[in-house]
Length: 488
Image 1 (spheres, rainbow, N blue to C red):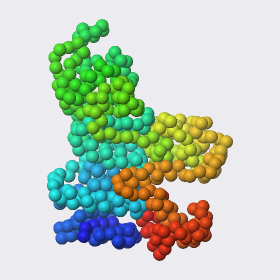
Image 2: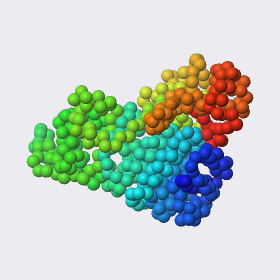
Image 3: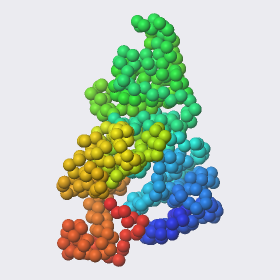
Image 4: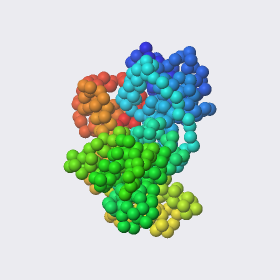
């Protein structure tokens, strides 16, 4: 029987975890503090630790550091209801197996724990690592609580422990350069230069000289030797933004640097060595460019060692309130005045917009609104007309709800569906529809406190059909634990 140590001072959560894993081959021991958990480790020798980040006494991150020092093979899953960019990255840097935001659903929790237990057994056989030293957290400017952004934060923490080449993809304005800087800030090269080059902003005839430098007399106007970006950031990190716009000739030279760390300046014959970590980014479908022979296949494979895919803002609308709060505070610091507040209608209007310019567009909209607002609170009328949609959102901001004029599911249904499909891919033979049906029926019963008439109405089915589903899924007498009350 596998052993799970739970470190959390929430008695309700301890109880809920016990209910969730009641039928599992898992022995659970629960304690309320990091100090108590550390004292138990030698005698208990658990296979897995689940721990809250906010604990009474020793913090979750400090407890994680000490656990990793005591036993580098022991896997730890961190839990929190207050996820931030810094804590997610720091947790993964320190070697956490996973990082879960509360509330979480029972299905995902069981899947994560099952995988962790299996990984723990494999790691016990052959594994050796040292915990990473903590470093002061910079203000990264990356904000998000959605699952897609939490995955990005985890990757940043993992990539910080190596010099592997990274390719960041995503639409314009999604924050690719912020991610590149975050990887750099958390890496072992953070005391060396970070140089960013926008390959699309530099004329084709000058890009090669910009990257590799040139010798005196190499071309008209080259009156002196010039050092390129590769030499400028020797031992540091070079961020090549919009790599898809690079010319074939420059692609060949960049490929050679990645292969041998050697290049020549334009017009020169002397070989120059540069120890540079490359982080590249593109907003173009790079695989299509490779297929069309517009981008060198060998260079693509060299760059695409680890990929970080940035989600567009329209796919993580739940992060809009956090981003707005971040930008209002940032603007307040710049202007040296208290941050503006929002009237209720503003967030609803912002959530409805599709944001083709993504996070960058949102920041510009908030900057414009702050400048144009006449009071200490932003009104819907302070937003651009295409976002305010003043015909359906009251100008005085008095409404707390905005309707789209048509019936439809909430915007996060697609995100939930993607979660189910990701789960099904890793569970051979699993059927998505029965799982979704069971969760919907269970959630409807939870929402209506077991009232089958109201639950059937919510689900759009007859009461006899609901009864059949309850029997089919064995839900009678098996209420959903409080920990998964978020449902779908």
